[in-house]
Image (cartoon, rainbow, N blue to C red):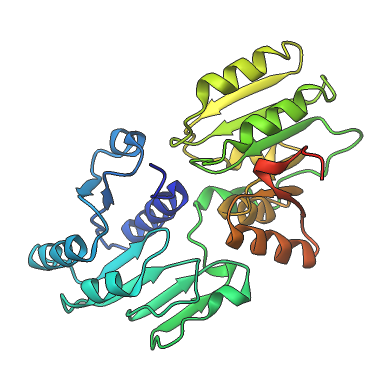
Length: 285
């Protein structure tokens, strides 16, 4: 149902990889609301029935009894009652959050959003790590950073990645806009595992048979495609930070308010351009 943002799952998987390299064995859990793709791609992923306070409290006690020494939670918008349920087990709690503006009971809060207004946690006494420098990122981006050559001549390729879910179906609108634009430009549409408009997108692309479209689904990493693209269109979440890491020019077609704030903050800092809400692209004002 899109409640679980797939970017949060990818963050957790990146952190798990870093932990293993440091000699720490992580135990990965995810709710049944996550796309089935992740449970197939990562057989060790365990299931928690929901993110309700009761379910989280039961989970925290269970993993403590199984020998866990700490809890790291990365979900879309953790609330105070949920954090209280987690802390009741008596284990150190780390929360990765990007919404802000709420009180969370935790030992450490990590907010990687590039939007200072979102960095406030009234009443929270946790240690805080704030800003995109603390984004859990696939190490593939760091490996490719600095290797992207500046494009010469006209635009050759554009990569469109509007989130793992794309709740509003903005990819359909972007495909229609690109369908009548520069047939020689490669138009790569990247769909996440939570995308639900496959048949509509296929019909849209079929209306423009000579427009150089390609579609890829549920990629492990976007780094190789990003480094090979002249322009990135993103929803303004983690992929905007990834584009910045690679130095790939970006356009932001946001979906949520916090993504708008991050897109505007990057633009104010000299990187990217915020176009507006993705679901409204191309509409007459």
